[in-house]
Length: 330
Image 1 (cartoon, rainbow, N blue to C red):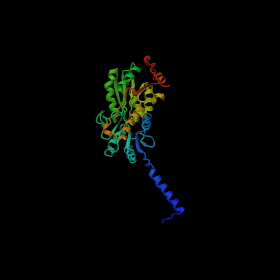
Image 2: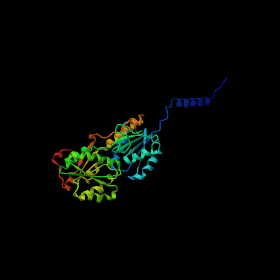
Image 3: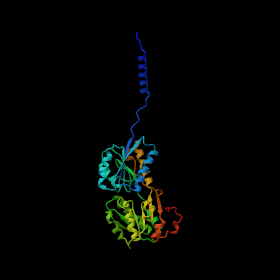
């Protein structure tokens, strides 16, 4: 006959409870996936891309329990891009967001065969940059969200704001595919709005004052594109242009708000980030990268902004037909 002491019965009961607890315990929570973000440098437009990318993913169900972000930037120092991407690759991300064309071009070479999807943002023309074969087809492991501006709309807005202008100066970096692609499009659309385009090559920010000074008496207005070389140097560009009373239409509104330039016509970079997040969500849900074509902003994703004070400083009155445009900075 088997006999059981009180102590042995208690021990058996505890063991049963432990086994029961194990039996009914749910599966261990999965570790959140890592998304790497490679940014060329800190800038209001690019920062907004990152912010809205993260916010949009959260809205789509990818909160902190599902994904964590590892971010890095190189302060617009192109030689440091490979090191940044190598470091981010070491975090074993499920995908990498690359912001700007130079960063994405290096990622295309460095991450080829790594099995890591690349989603780009703020790339003006992925086809010209040889990132995707066409606007309708992604690369093998690269697709993303363009910041391609509607340059016909830019020229139309510039004509309306400066009705007497004839020559439109265009500073650009000859070594950046974004800039050269933008120039090619602008030269096609500007004549329809009565402009002759005057290209101004700038490949070193130290040359900005003298290059802008060379436009005195030759240009009536200047459009500055979303260039990775020029946008960080906008204070120098604005100062040099002020010295020769040359008005600027910028591709970023930040300098209009700060009172450095009179006007801007820009892509909504918040939408660029949201578009990239939508693509990232599809990839996280299992859709192959090569089945997701790149996207570009629509006309509705652009907005104009005018600083009346700066216009007055340049001696340029705001035309009457823009008086009710609801596009003036406060």
